[in-house]
Length: 326
Picture 1 (cartoon, rainbow, N blue to C red):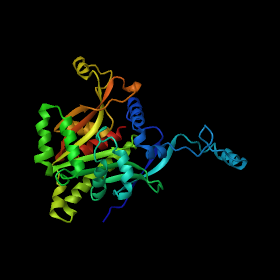
Picture 2 (picture 1 turned 90 degrees about the vertical axis):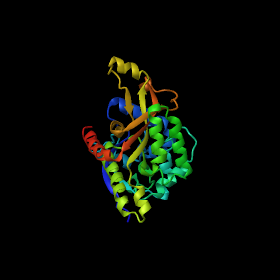
Picture 3 (picture 1 turned 60 degrees about the horizontal axis):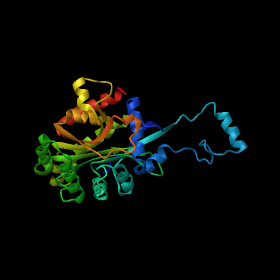
């Protein structure tokens, strides 16, 4: 039986929400760099009142002006709208929204992204998409899922993800560990996929991840066949994400220079995953052109992390603490 939608009311700001002024600037730059991939979400988030004028307000009749004049002292648009976010099981109609969110999942690599999206949408027992309650456009704001690498080993998209990770890993101390999880131990490994628009309210993150890991646990008991139940008995998760690393990171470490962060996490939960990971590696991504001023000393990097399943309870607790402090 599909779960009932979980509603979380948040005030959705037109500017990306970050954890510091720099992080907000970073989010703005990142959203600009992927604007073409986020058209539907951006149109909703920054949707002004219909207008033929440059100030963003519709032309009004004298009656409209009188009505507005009477209420303008009580209500003024401050760039914030009330939004009821709901969590839903993925469905076929979400295809284009999920594909948009995952457009840069493997950087600029050409691969079977459509097949990857199909896997996420077909796995309805574990996975969540976030939408605005009663939004006619049904724009997607986030998607999370966990895919068993062995169960889907013959799918072209999964083979391409594994090949991408193999080629990206240049860390000799990690190569064999990566190969072990992607091949010999793949039956115990979940590829944790988490993508969202940059200004999703961070208060949604704890319930979003709680829902994912609860569903994984339930699936080990409720799936109709033994093979399916076993496919969710993850011992490890592999997470592919994106960060920004300081160009002089090694020198900064030697000099203990804290004027700028050595590493900037686009998604705050990645810092927790990174700390709890049994191993990780980073690799270069295509440079952004032109480089925004806020990132002049940073370069985009891919981050791959392996997190043992028994670390997930600690992750959930630390994520709640992190969000409560922001």
